[in-house]
Image (cartoon, rainbow, N blue to C red; front, side, top):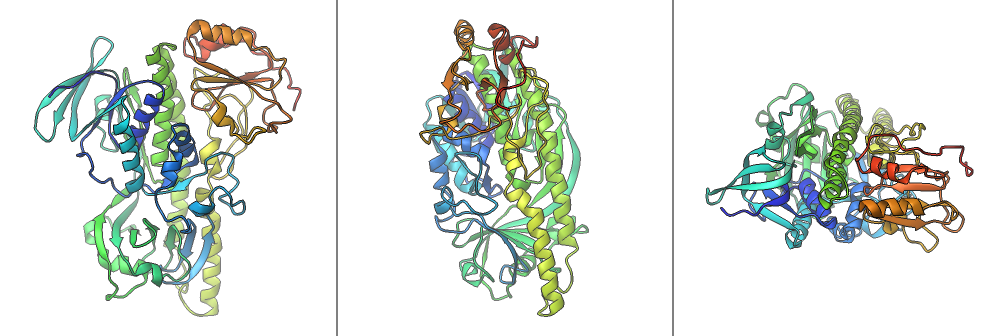
Length: 562
């Protein structure tokens, strides 16, 4: 087995590993991806939502249009609906624009996103193969399919990995500067770094079945939707439209005393959720049973080996923040690895990965767990009369529908989870003493406090701010008299990629959150520093690239635009 050495070895070719490889390639860094599945083997149907932050990254990589073209038909409603059963009465509906209307609709809770790329509802069976094809076509990425990582060790500033070709049984050795485990909940790399999952091992057991039901769309009790919650005392569940025609993913939420998947009558439960009799035709295509958990690894790194995605954290994927949280891990690590391997940052920059991502993982996992607890209570306390054709039944449906909308609109219009999180204790951010605004799953306050996401706006000619930012750091010059030459010179001396972007507060309609004359955006779109002047440009850049932990001197006098 002949294997070429590589700067970065990525274990796992799911969405997290593929996004890491593609982002590294965009930054000029080659990688090798090892995947145990044979090339072309379809992924599971477990992920159904690409978040806005992930779509922003895909836009930067030139992939957002291709991804948005995948999934449900252009005019298929992306709504979330609550019914008694699929063929039963509607209780409530959260309107979400279909793909055709995604950019032009401006009413409803899932519109008006502060971004050039709102979220997209698409199943992993369509999303992952697109990423895989782009990775295969990229000359900086090599994929070793049907190959297993057996072991890895550090040796002389590199990682030595032992691999096995699962088709031939041949073994080989690969040497890499760094190794990243994106290899899922049963991660080999997590074991190699001595990581242990801690938290809640079981929150909810879900018996999931991909079915082919060509007659279901016409039998629905109300207009179609992407996500279909079914609330009835017999068997509450959830059904996702996969292709908008005949493929559906049925989630049967097991009751607290149902601890074995095989002991629950799958066919009977599916029919109860759908609200159909024994003569209704459907075919079970695949079983996708899973357990909702809240588990976080006690460490994300040992030396030159890292973990990301499900290898680092597992939780109930409310708000779509299972896969998307893993992709956020990958993007944070990617720019840091890119900086180190490109030579403009020391490897101490990589200390920021754990300092930044592990606290966010704890925050998001608790958001998801709290929402899961509310959803479980809601399903398990449904009134017995909810399906009755009586005044009491009508009142029950109205009460349950209102509560379901209030609880779930938070996760399906989750601006807070997309944009609100911040890095509050990073060794490579120039803090100025102001606390970032609090956020919830649903609510977000734009802020330029260092560590927050750079607030989005469109400049005068209609272009997105994000489309104008450079591949490295970007210095936003919000007052033309603000001095930038010293920082440009310091960046040139250190080889740090820096783009200076002059902004006109008036004509570019700059949001009020931008109160300072200067702001430095990191390569990942978070605020690295802000101020009215830079006292020591070299010291500031050294802090931001991990070459110094000495606080940079910053003028934080009251801003003139507050």
